[in-house]
Image 1 (cartoon, rainbow, N blue to C red):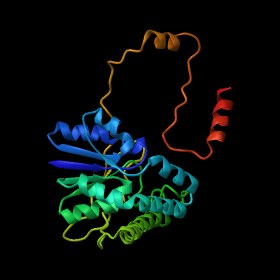
Image 2: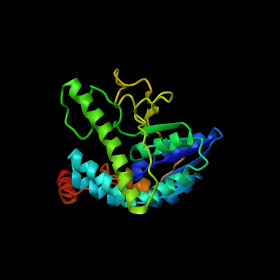
Image 3: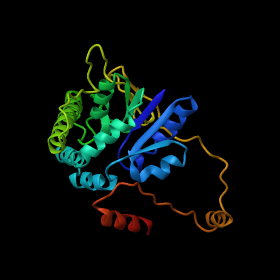
Image 4: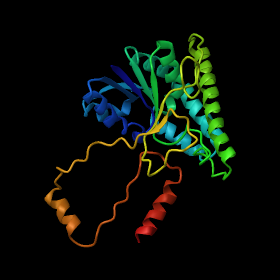
Length: 275
């Protein structure tokens, strides 16, 4: 089977799909991993076929960071970024999926990739590394505080899905008018459209971290994290071993790849904590 994986974002949006791609390849499938061009070396060093996508994740990170916890501003920034790179992204995803028998997509590609799968009459799977399109009363959409009322929590998820569907169609329309693309009907991967059922959702986190919800749709599954096999063959250099074994236990401070507008304040907190 030819499988195309479509993802976009920082390294945290790409890293999990390396072991997933390798797992699929070990079972005889051909895999193309399409992601921002800055991850070309990371993907290809694992022997995975890479397809570059337009856009700089750092620009998107800055936009999302400025939006903060304002959900509507967050959606606006996501949509503006999508429109800016839209024409090139559409061309690239079409090319990446040209020979695909299955499309696997993540948050940023959800509606567009599902629509492409419908047009090609092939199946698709949505994978999320954080709960976004899985309505439940257990907790609200990640951009909102816990409303402590199950109906309102669930409503926040459904509203998020609806907003995503609308902005995806509106964003394409803006790109279409700008560059002269043909009109297109968009389909939601999160709703049944007989005879086609809604797209299966795989939640790539541990059930010990976020347990499956009893009110989820039956096509939603928690699979666990996507990690590489544990490597116990590593041997530290003499210098590193000496540093770790001598003196007080060292403290490691680690960061993700997202931009933070409060970086100076974070730096102050860490330095004070270390003191």
